[in-house]
Figure 1 (tube, rainbow, N blue to C red):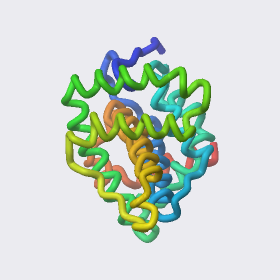
Figure 2 (cartoon, helix red, strand yellow):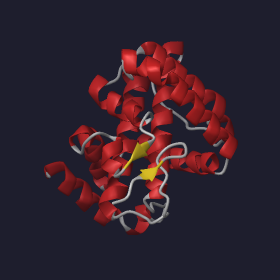
Figure 3 (cartoon, rainbow, N blue to C red):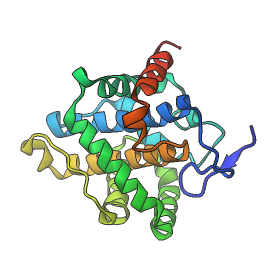
Length: 219
């Protein structure tokens, strides 16, 4: 497979949609990020390893496969579990589904705004050395990623409504962490669309996506 170089996030030169497996990998990245957002909003904390996978994906501008963006399939275990859970009606969490739909809508606005894409790319590259030194879940790195989201993506609308405990949602550090993680969710949404994903998949391909997620979990 020829290397496909990124413009801002993960851009495919030939524009060919990916296979269902690739779409599910992207969706798992999105769900893993939103599951961490939910944990921050409800409990004020995140799972370091799971969040690191999401945040690290922001700094991978060039990859040959969707899997490379997240390091490995194993890194997306919690995300794949969430895909399976959220697509099966009896285990669905309405709050995560609403956030996911809002992120996908917001990504469309981001994709239509070259200035925002260039600004995000520039600032992430500028942040790269600090992230390499301290890690992607360092408080300062998360804070700066949160600023990128607040300055260049959130204003594009619609707002992503995060539900949780007011005790945590009123804390600036938690708000910054949530915004940073939403930036990672946008990154996964970009990949989802590039893999040919659309809203219609949630109506007509739910069974196929669930099956693919479960197969990836045991691969």
